[in-house]
Image 1: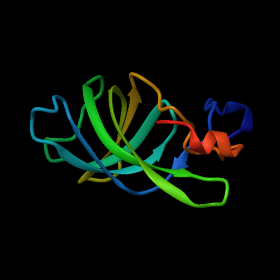
Image 2: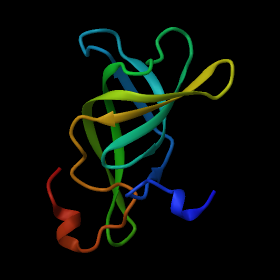
Image 3: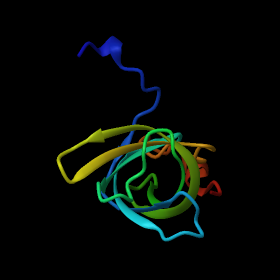
Image 4: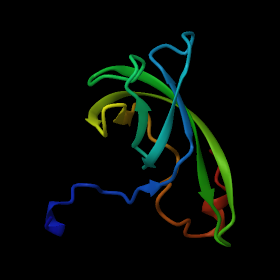
Length: 124
């Protein structure tokens, strides 16, 4: 693919950590596996067992994101974000990859380094 075809405006953080989601958080939560995340969207995998989200569905997700400090240390920041499913890809006969766009962006860009100590201390 040509570099000019890249539409992402922000580097993504690739990591594998649990993500919990449901259409309504008063319902039973389903677990998925985070693939990558930016401040505006996340991609995760889940089993295609009837609980995996579908294209256009509104869901709420609960997840943790590593927040790296200037000395390569990190803390986990916890978030709950509503959003809509804008892509669902078939990984294999059992697993789907879901792309979720957040209704409100995260307060930092997970895939980009923190520039200075004041950024590392900023509230979430």
